[in-house]
Image (tube, rainbow, N blue to C red; front, side):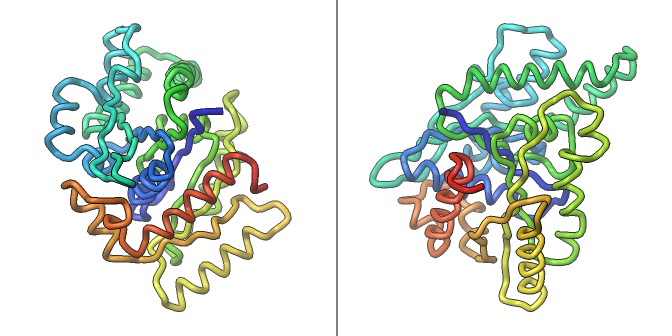
Length: 299
């Protein structure tokens, strides 16, 4: 089935979500897959990394962003507008085998935070039941994904830190949930809770929506220090329990200056391998594991 949906999420910020989305999207695209990135973070970091400031400014001004789409559909009642109207194709400036990477983008902007706030404000003013609204939003996003996924092999959601309505929807609609985490005490402190809450917590018990798939934890920003090594060992032990709250990728993303450089420069890059340097092979391993997880090669 085309259009496998991947949500990259974590309660904690600064753990490498956007780096994971960009690196994985480009690794999948380098292997010939058509990839769509949907940016659900008001910081719009994935959008700026892929589109650059000039293109993103144009998308925002034309309302061709996630927040623009939601405003038109939910508040302006423009029922004929589709995801496809807001998606910018061929945004990547990276090449592989002399071909531009086939990556498209549904961008975000800082207005997304205001749109989400307005959703809750209008709910409270209208005394509308929140479960009814959640169901409506879920059906809207599910319908748009059903239409959109026909054109792509993979759709990646870059979720904002925490659990917003949009993050919850993307997690529930995803075929695979990836949770990037730095292997230290603070970054993994709430990891078990995050991985189990939507599946077995109170939120899961009161909703009629799909139960999310068991997430895959991805170790990021790994450094050769004792704390990181011991934390990875603990994650591996948790992963091997009879009923773990998460699965664990074998691939681990190291702390590398090349990653920050790759994300920080949005000018044209000659090739995927030149952009990511010594992490290109690691990203290829991650894309292989991701495909295995999605297509049933891993339990």
